[in-house]
Image 1 (cartoon, helix red, strand yellow):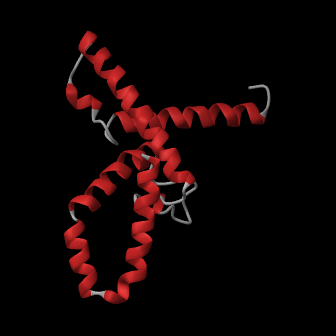
Image 2 (cartoon, one colour):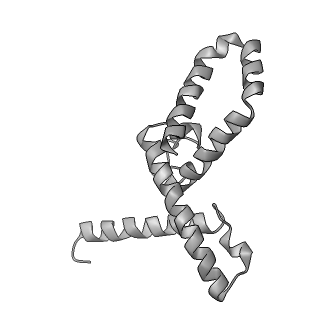
Amino acid sequence: MADIQAAVDAYAKRFGIEEMFRDFKGGGYNLERTNLTGERLSKLLILLSLAYLKSIIQGMEIKSKQVQEYLSRKTENYRKYARHSTFYIGLWGESWVDSMFSNWQVVVELMSLSPHKLPNYQQGIRAMRLILSAL
């Protein structure tokens, strides 16, 4: 490398590629478990790439609204990078909102049992609306 900044930039690109490989393998799509080869693998990769792009865009939108902590663990003080990728946040944002809708009656019943938790409930509803707007 010509200078230190070029090396840092190259490593940052490599880190993004490594994160993508993790997402395609065990961290999201479990691509290795398909045991596909040849043309069938190529077709699946095209579909996964489109789905991956959708999740990345959704994850970026969720992060821009600063509600990703509802979908993943916060970064610990000793970690330099977040625990979960932008892909993971985008993928699970949709699932989180779906689960809220499907369990709405249970949530309402729980809130009636614990009215002192109303501020937390309202905060979660606000986060759900922001995440839903990103989808």
